[in-house]
Image (cartoon, rainbow, N blue to C red; front, side, top):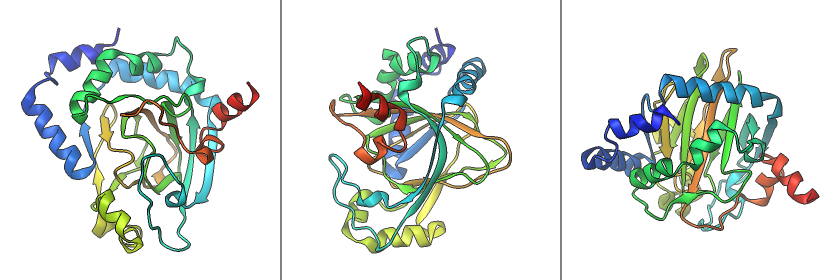
Length: 263
């Protein structure tokens, strides 16, 4: 159905040497990229689907302290006093994808789940059970950004469908979660001096970026230029009952939240 999955097999992603190198990057940096993961045809196919869904996108624009939220299976973060991150982007959440969706079909394919288990070195990894957050698409225009934060799931797969004209760089902290939990000063260092305490993860159109969502502090820098950056995010977790926090359900994933309340 998808040429990308045929390419996965042809390029030998089950090769032990490749997997070992990829896992080493993932463990060291919290993220790693497979360039040209999507075939040209599949990238256009997915991009066209997202453009058809663009009218359903919800504007998420807020300042808040993401470290104050109590998240499942996450140690308490000692955040700096008065700290707030800026989050501004458009989101199409998982409830907007029909059973005929190509992106949804790709996310549900056993071969893709197996690939994620192999590359993350976690055989217990499964698709995220939260229907609003398991699969979503983000649109980011000029000036849009996502501030420093941790995700609520173990692993995220980002399919880069369109990069725009500039900006939108993905940055990860050089400090791991254990270290960040010990002192708010560590987060202050990252936030105030990102050049010294973070590094960019490169990507281009068609890339697959895999990162350890709940374990790695990361942000997306401001997007520059008139063209939107479009990324499909697919979430995975080792625990079946994992969900996003209540505040995210009522803001970023507002459509699925309202649907749940009205049902």
